Image (tube, protein in one colour):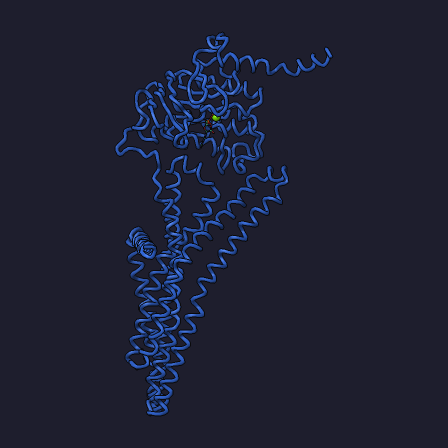
Length: 606
Ligand SMILES: Nc1ncnc2c1ncn2[C@@H]1O[C@H](COP(=O)(O)OP(=O)(O)O)[C@@H](O)[C@H]1O
Ligand SMILES: [Mg+2]
């Protein structure tokens, strides 16, 4: 019973390898077919000239040395030289062609992966650490190239050379060939037993290396926290363990891979020694001519290299296939919120947003939104407030279709956002996230990301509106100042104002502000608030706010608690509901300014 299980597993694994190879070839083989044919042609020349060299050895020995034929003294060396010349040129050409194909394949997969990653949904990125992902991709992309090139070179060059040489060997001496070829089966058996071990070790090694690289990137990003909390030592220890494990794994791979060498050498040694002993005996006892024996030995020695490479091929292919399959694991992920085929564009007339009894959780069985139901009227401002963790940012995410609700619908002007293209939906929305994110590039580039065709004048106008111009002009190169990673050279408030400018330049009918002003000091907040009020006119706005002062003028205030709307109305209405949550928040926040004074008063009284 147990045995059966194992053999089943092996069979399916072999099927997997073949499927993977087929796929790599199906996806890339056709485009490169002419180049591969050319490279194969070159490899055939290499094999043929190699075999020719072995074959001609008989004449060299018999004609020149035994018969002492002077005519052959020029003809044979010239023939040998020409064969080497062909071999050299053909080897050069195939090398260049295959390298170019390989580089092209790497570039193609990088392109495919990048565009695929941009298509994947938000949850993929919350589940995978960025640095780990990058390191994994980087290590694996070369795998696909190696799969193709290794297979092609080994089959075309090594296998062909080997076949040609074996033909020469049999032609020259069938008995000796029999002795030499006995070496084949034991080598093949041994190689097969190594493959599986190697596959497991390779996968672990790639993963460990990716984690080491990820740890390095994480330290680079969090360097100030690392220093402030003097985390250097524990981090070093943690990474040290990873590095050690990675080293161990690489050593294991080397041991498995190199295990082929001694075995191949020993078996080859036995075969070659046997051939020499037997043919020598034959020459001495029966007076056989040495020519065919020399030709045979030359063929055997020349066959040795390609045979050894072929013996290693499976081992190398194993690594390449692990790489390729790890790439395909990413490429095969389907974006969760895929557009329906022939989904129409979202048509926004007025921009009424409706959440219809929406329930949602990031994990199955968890309810972050629990029957969320509200309407954000067109051209008006709706404010969401409530304790943190209540689900406000989740509402903003769902509205952009980063995730799909588990139950209920989200409608914009009566159209379910699930039924329209994501592109059209998102083009109608300008979003200022809770954590501003800035990309590599200048300040101007970063604002322009809001709308690629925005003019410089529009960018500057948006920056002015977002109260960002005052600090932009003090930067060394003004708008053309390059930003550090995620804008580290700017303060939190400055980053947020750039993020607001980016949303303003988009000029979309729906504006989503997720605590957009929370990182600003009171003065800039008042200024940005004034600017926002300007652009909030005639737009449908959903604003998540922290400080109530920023939303008193909202047309509608919704209090969110544990994924539901528990209160709704204008500031006036809500503040007067004495037992309401809003009224309590309000009381808390207006009192916030007083504790110091109260403490002081208390100490004086004492
Ligand atoms: N990407 C995520 N994956 C898993 N859980 C999340 C994610 N984002 C938020 N949550 C959880 O969902 C709940 C609501 O979060 P959120 O909408 O950000 O609240 P708010 O913006 O009101 O502070 C929280 O309990 C939070 O832990
Ligand atoms: Mg939030």
